[in-house]
Length: 43
Length: 518
Image: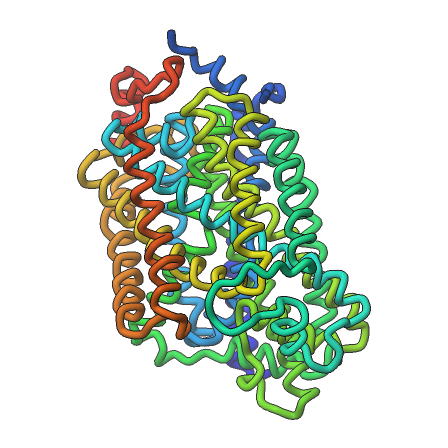
């Protein structure tokens, strides 16, 4: 692989997978009061 | 008599937690397109440089539009038509238009999953021999010229029946026990299976050459409008936005859930999986090119050709090919099933809301006819032609068109954006303000309208796929037109008397939402 291609692959990984990691961390740091305390009936 | 919100939630069903909702939303977004469309689109549109327009499209159109869908469903607690009707009675037809599109997609999407089911098993014995292309078209599908036939292909009919049985079982089990529970199992399984496939592909000889082709940047491509259009198109089609799915799923989420934070996770998870797919597919294509002594660009393919012609060839030539085949086609089945369930849920949810049916009755009323039409149209020797035409037209002149129209209507005619932003800001970790409104009202509609206009002119200029005019008229323009007309007609039918259509805008809660947005 050329250096250019390796750099762009790493950039894509950092941006997209890093973005996912950051989004998950952001979500986990928030209050989880939105979680319903039971499964709603669905009949 | 109208029902109170807690009662409605009890009856409609709900995801048991934010985690289940996020997995279900990822399951919907991650579909066949992530695996067989993204790698080719990225390669064709600048390679490594495609990261730039792709990320711009994700952040300026994809995720903002995802928030719009979330806001509608989460605020109004209804299926697509009910949420639109509660937002503004005059916009209900947009919801039914989306429902019609989803019905149309479901009937052909199931057929592709059925192909993948068969090929998962074919991979073990490599049934295609040394001619994967001939095997797929002539022996497996028994494709015969153009036109419509009634000759049934049992090899497609049986797996298609199994797919429909599995999907209707999941739907019948309900929002949490069916859709939610299956996503909790399938999505981690999909990620693990595909990760193993990628690792295996990376160790094949020639893999580096494939990745070199995918990631070598062509910076000149960034000045080409068609590359930007491809990026916006890819993000739009990949995220399952604009045709009712995310509205429906958001209506099943707890009121105090952080929807904007969840949306960022869904958006980046979807794109992250696309990147994984790109790496796996191009590593495998690099191997195939080396094995055949040709350049990688001579073996690059997408869609049906990639999955059912190129990959079988790779499976035949690679050491441990059966494992690659089972992982690849198994991933297609899982990714397809979770997406198909979400598409069909748009229809089931809408019918339930409109007629106040039980879930099982609604699944039978929707799933029965959908399965029947699907089996009749797509288990015959002409199934692939019809599938190709419906897919092309309904994606462009169904999904893309309704997305642009609904954004313009909500932003400019109903003026719904301040209230919707305020609603998400109540519990959202990422605040929406004027920037979000500008993106949804101006940037995203303009970008998608540009993509739509180009596709429209291309389609007028050259009949799609070389099919006969009457087939394009019936299954292409006809199908796209039918769902639009259906939307207008169904919106005129009355709701069950117990359904509360009170616009959220008439409550003090909504006034607070608008205040929050300022």
